[in-house]
Length: 345
Image (tube, rainbow, N blue to C red; front, side, top):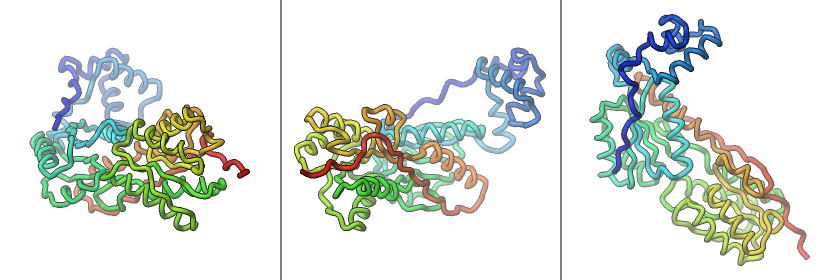
């Protein structure tokens, strides 16, 4: 387990009066901006915010903690940060926490076994966090977390899992159905799947959605191309196998990185995208529109996951009842990597 250090704190020498002097306003005006009051003009607010950034000023979190009986710090446990979704959700959590006046403490874990998760939780509880967000969308993590009894509330990110009161999820089943449906509606007889790695709830949900759409349309269901991780390298290896089968005309990859690598492998083997093979990705990473061709993909709002996770955590911290959190809905984004299949000779 690896614990990341917190951001460097604002120097104690920087005071509200320093911000006021730099912005050319009163301390009362700075206080209004810092506390989100609406009775401040846009031009004045911009000057104050620029001064805050320049001086790296923060309101006195210690004073606020005394007033609220809270540490004003949220804990985050994250598994496998290099994965696109986890990284984006982490950013969303940190931003939403900051907007609500909270700092964040991150503990990254390399496994989801009970001992590792328990140690990570103990680290954050010992740091007196007010609540914890767990970003470990693995099948093995849920039963471990369900069996814990902690004094602080926990909200989990369980991508592709069923909706629940303590977990933020995304409807990855629907996303895979939308992608598969799009390819079938273009006229492809069936769709092949480059699967996500085993053990991830997103992998299971995306595979389930792909199979259910094929089954509902009465289309052939071929074995998927198995992978061991979410990397482009896994997609490239699958792409080389796909290129050897001229009957394959449509592919759904479990994420955009693998979709990009599938397209690269196909192109290297002399097969054109989308003239010979249509390819759809998943996630809509920011680079997807700049692929050649631009990637048709399923857009997932990871920023919204972070916002909802922190919002629910704050509600739980305030003693509000835990109500069902609706799954975040995906969206099909159609670009140039998909087209109708070539007419058969």
